[in-house]
Image 1 (cartoon, rainbow, N blue to C red):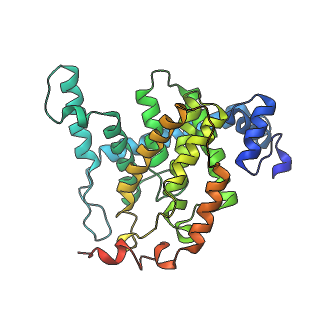
Image 2: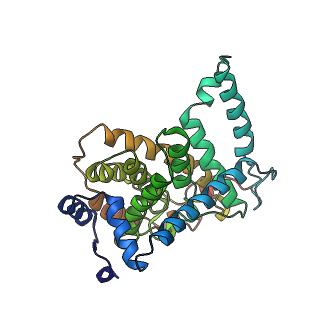
Image 3: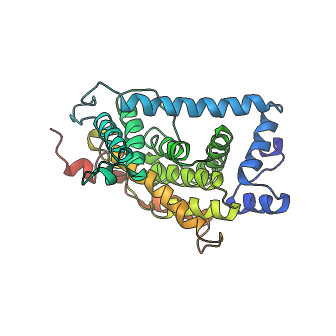
Amino acid sequence: KDSTVPYPFTSCDGLINICREKHMSISDVVWQNELALHEGDADYVRNYLLHVWKVMSKCVENGCNSKQPILPGGLDVPRRAPHMYERLAANSDMLRNNRRRSDAALESSDSAWVNLFALAVSEENAGGGRIVTAPTNGSAGIIPAVLQYYWRFVDSANEDGVVRFLLAAGAVGYLFKRNASISGAEVGCQGEVGSACSMAAAGLCEVLGGTPEQVENAAEIGIEHHLGLTCDPVGGLVQIPCIERNAMAANTAINAVRMAMLGDGSHMVSLDKAIKTMKETGHDMMSKYRETSKGGLAVNVVEC
């Protein structure tokens, strides 16, 4: 309950005000609240978050090395992550050895690796593997992909950063769940993939040194451009369009951070207003666009 933590907040505006008044980062605020909820056991909180990260990383590894060629469910969707991993690894070696191929640079870009990480996790989810709901199964590839980006491509990355990333992402996830929804059945895919994109953007911006205002801006950009996104899974399976959608959203989260970090944190639309808009938009959606597979791609893509 809010009364059990030293820094309760129910809105992003409230969270930012705490950060300003106490000269704390968003992850600092959430850290102190988590300590209060767990009897001051810092080791427990840290180790739990690192365990979450470990499970996410293992999921990426499993997805990249899977020997299962086709995902179950009857749509005959092929796993792409293993082949992508082989190509990206080979092209990275070529670039390191100064051997060029027309597509080597494109396929070895940071964005291509982020695509791979997200696909690997989403395919593991579709194949019944172990994943972290972050915040849902259908959006489980986004935060791990952006965390992998941080871990592999940011020189200053360390475990403290992973902890701070997850704390900041968790704060944003809490706001979505409290003030709107993270359920595709209630508000469409904007509540799943959109929320995860926003959470990932907040986490990355936090560990790259963003101010609380910049973190909010990154999170807001992440959700604003997913508003209205429908949930129309073909065959009722979390495969089409869900798997690719995770990869797109992971890269959107990183781009949101780039945009936010180039500014001073001021922005026209607050995260609170974007969350409110998402909730209202979701409730205005016809049920056929909210996980029922009765509209959209679900009825226009033939299952065969």
